[in-house]
Amino acid sequence: MGAHKAWGIKGPVEGAQVRDSPVPGLGDKTFLARSRGTQEPETMLLWLTLTVLWSTTCWADQMYGNGRGTYFSSSPDNTNDISGIRVSLSPIGIIRSIQLRYGSNWSETYGVSGGHAEEFLLWPDEYIIGLVGSYRVYLRYLVVYTNLGRWAAFGKESGYSFTAYPGEPGKVLTGLFGQTQLLGITGIGFKWDYPLAEPNTAPPSTTQNNETSNKE
Image (cartoon, rainbow, N blue to C red):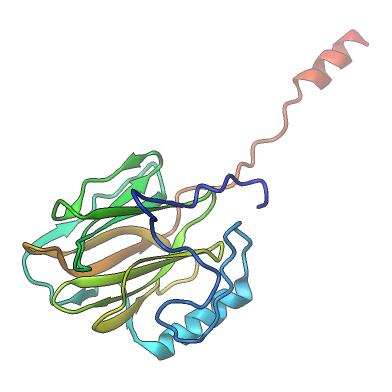
């Protein structure tokens, strides 16, 4: 894990917040996020337990927010897993739009144009496995958590809170859906599935050994 390049967070000004503790939305509860990608399975289990107690859970096909306006849904990518997320915020703290990054390409913009964009780029073999957010008339706050123990916060907590994570072990975030109006996103839901990437199990090359045998 230590050899991974620290892609991390970036944005036009400060970018999204990436910190070790405490976890946004959990008060004084501590989530030991490791900015260098160290996985803490015990801590993740604690986080999942706390978030279930803290707020309403978002399962598959469930959308949170007022849900008014034009419907949107991300298109499936059968080649690449999600490698990043970009969130644009208005000056008054409304989440105007969200984009997902698959491989090295960004998706279309889900929401409305404008605002201050912040990015969270994932490391190799890193996946989004849970989210926390809040909304009033519009979506105001979103925190993403990864399997490597990192998290990034966008916006400020305000209004009604929700927690979202897959209903089956091993599934990760694969897409979004929701609704949007004039000022931004009014409702959001999350798509979960198993990651596409598989470990490299190709056997080592035997060419050199064969050439050595032929010379003997």
